[in-house]
Each structure stands twice: as C-alpha cells, then as structure tokens.
Image (cartoon, one colour):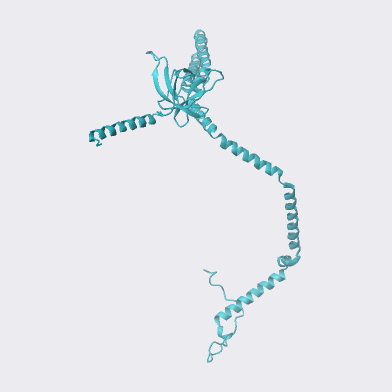
Length: 327
C-alpha cells in the first residue's frame, strides 16, 4: 500500500502540533499525563504571583498555578486556580498564603489543618493575607502618631490663647519648636511609608537575613555541634599533666642557664673564661696570617718545579688588612 505525500505531510503536521502543545504545557508547569485535581483559593492581592508558580506543602512542590481571574467586576478579590499533581489529603480547615523567596520567586504555601474531612476537586481553599512587617509596624505606631498629632493641635491652640503673655523672642522659640515637631512627624511618616521608607527597606533586609539564616540552619547547627565537641575534647584532655611537664622543662632549662652563668661545663667556661676567648682569638689571627702567607708565597711551602727557586722572603708576622671591609 503506497501512502501519498499529502498523507505524510498531514500526519507529520499533526504530530508536530501535538508535541508543540505538550511542550507549551510543560513550560507552563503542566503535566498532561499526570492525574490532576483542580482547586481554587481567593486572595485580595496577588503581588508577584504568576501562572506556573509552585504550590508547596511542607516545602514539597505538589502542584502549580493554572490561572488568575478576577472575582467580580469590582475586583474585590482574585481567584487563583491551581492543579495538584499528587494525591494528597488536604483538610478543610487548611489555609494558603503567598510567600516570596529571597531569590525573587513566588509560591503558594498551604498550611495543613487538623480537620477530619478533606477538600475535593473543585473546592475552594481559604486564603490568608500575608501582611508585611512594615504594615504591621505601621498599624502598631499609627495610634501613637495620631495621639502626637492631637497633642500638637491642643498645644498649638493653648499657645495661641496665651501668646500675648510671652515676648517676641519666646514666641519665636515656640514657633521653632512647633516647626521641629511638625518636621519630625513628617519624617516619621516617611520613615514608616511601606516599600519606600528607610525603616521599610531595613525591615525587608532583616526579613531576607532571617530567611537566609533559616535556610542555613543545618550548617549553623553543624558548626555549633563541632564547637561543642571541641570544647568537650579540651575539657577531657589531661591539661594538668601537660602543665607539669612544661614546668619540669622550664626548671631544667633554668638550671642549665644558671650553670652556664656560673662557668660550669664547656659552655660555661667558654662564656665566662676571658683567657679562653683570648686564646681562641689569637689562634684565629695566627691561622689567618698563615693562610695569607701561603697565598702570597706558595713556593715557601710547596716546591712546584725541580728548577724552581726557593722563596727566601721573610714570612708574614701579622695578617694583612682586609681590603673588602674598607669598601
């Protein structure tokens, strides 16, 4: 049976389209061959969350985000649909949060509940808003800032009423004080401004540092264990015996040095006997004179030729001056 070229082209096109669809879904984090169950979770804000971001339970990736849609026309919330590629029983009282890692990626983390009933395909999981540290701090300090503003307003009103009592210099000083307080309040507002203030950036850095510490918890634990083992080994070592041996060695060395100082032994005599030093110095000078005379008049000591003439010059009685030391 002969297959026409048109049939071959059509079959090849169908296969190519199939592989293209499979590859596109694979890049989106979907596995068309795995058994999947679709569930939903609702958030008011989904900053940084994208399609194909991971769904994690206890650090294990169990699925991926499939889509993001608005809940209504007023955009009161965002409905996130996700697929689970693993068969996991999720209790009905579980909740999900959007968590951003220090590397910039985002994932939905599901915290398991304690209920005896489990979610089914198509059910909606409870979403918890993850407030930032800056927002929590601002909510804590907001009443304080409002109290300060009310106090400043009351103080300003009081000063206006008794303003005639003070002179011009006092009024100028009070005005400067109020301007400083207003400037301080404005700086405090800017400091607490989310995502822009200095305190916000500092807290973000602290948050990133805490995440790094959490990720390196195993390494830190290993270092502490090594330090503990080293301390235990040092505590169990026989330090007293080592110190005793060191004291004995020190005593022996002191005895030897005292003997040398008193002139005992060869080293002691060499160090304390001036006559021995002078004898050695004289012997060294004589040897130096002999070597120089041998260098200048070798025929006096060795006859090289049968017809050689014997050197009758007088021998050196003192060493020649060292020419190198004068340069």
